[in-house]
Image (cartoon, rainbow, N blue to C red; front, side, top):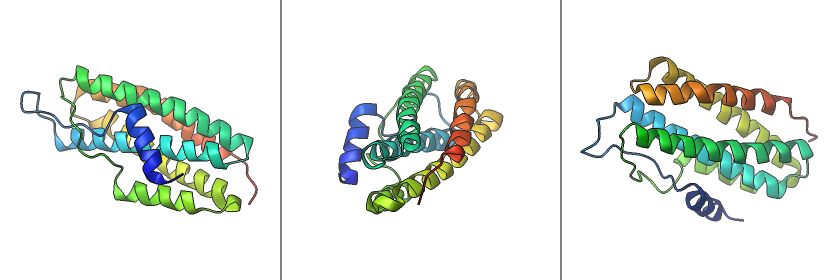
Amino acid sequence: MKITKYLALFLLAVGLCGFVPQAEAAPASSMTRNFIRNATISNGFEIMSSRMALQRSQNPEVRNYAQQMIEDHRQADEDLRNTVMSSRYRMRGMANDLDQRHRSMLKRLERASVQDFDWNYVRMQTQAHDEAVQLFRSYANHGGNPTLRDFAERMLPTLEEHQHHVRQIRFYR
């Protein structure tokens, strides 16, 4: 399946392309805009790469982890959308796509051989969750919007659990 199909499925399922405060909404700091954008990209990448893992991996540990990522990150996206709306930011698509780095990662994963797929997926999920934990921790500690700061604090334990879990996956290469 091509990446564009994964991207289309993600955009249809989640309905999030990014967020931008509108003129009538409260102004957002660049830190807040970056947090929202990067959290959205992170969720999207984790969902799309995990869908690919469900189709390509034969490893039950990888498949179970991937299913959990899809469920948890769909919920995280919904919670983020609700939090942004309750913060009086108006949602408007910033882009209909992941950023270039995450698109490249998905392409590499898509091209990975059967023997290398699990290793690449686990490596990318480890990196993605390390980045997500850092992003959410930073916003929880220093973010300017109290509602989004609370959201970041609530999400941190789940992201840290994902971070720990992905490091425990055994696979054979």
